[in-house]
Length: 379
Image (cartoon, rainbow, N blue to C red; front, top):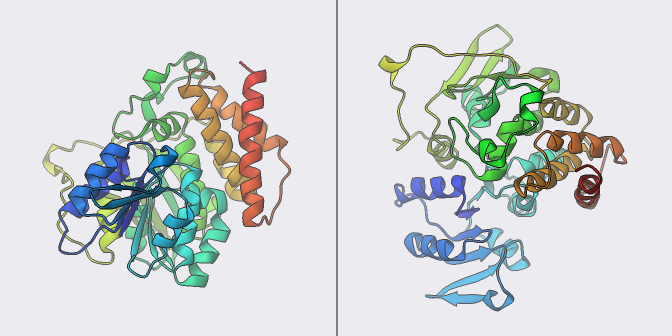
């Protein structure tokens, strides 16, 4: 097994699960963005054979630390190791489009990918799914919402009429646009139920995370956008619903703990005892649901638009959002301008309905530069 993004929230939860299943899994490789010391500690603890780091000085590539070689993440060295015969499962937990190339490489080699990097399908859904089918690769979702759908359909999507993805609503549920105009970075990072990295936490605050999940579900489950709904569920206990053609509805319920969907992805189709918290049924009083406020949170509509149009729109939306969120976290862009920047760049881009892989990468680069330019013109 290889865990990409091992020092992030999903990666650390994955290693916690693997630490309890040492008789079943062997960690071959680990990768991270910047936390080299933590990455080395993880490698020693889990006896990894190699590590990779995204941002490290040239003198560390390759590096020997207690016999563990270190490489540049996304390099040809890492791609070869991902595709090696001794790797069965790749956990793709790198945040953003940075995880696309390694997800692609793993599927190209016919590996099973436990997918937490939703951007792989947002950017290149049709191409990624075709690649998996062509080479015998398999994608098992790790996102709690998509794992819930996957569990409910039990690998047999026949008879599904629609799915309903749930969302907590983030820290600003119920806020008007007027109130959102002056929110701070600190407020945006206070998620009410999940502990996540800063980028995905801001995405949850704008509802862009739910927009990206709509796009991911569209390709992962081969659904039309009209078959995907979103409801706000602040308790974050019901992770998604699946409604079948006969009117029956199945829901997956568990406390908000990512170790459960991670373990299910790794052990599928088996179910094993899991360290995740159990539902305390006697303490439950009620579940609440409401429609998302699309006026205050227009990012969700962008997700549906991209799911309908396909082509280059996913690459453009994702790149624009990543760049805009980075600008917000650097305090250079107001909160509401994240979605506005994405809207402007989507409108301005030259749409290609059937892009190649190189075309998607070019659209990604263009969108990032355009948001940077847009940001300089719209303080």
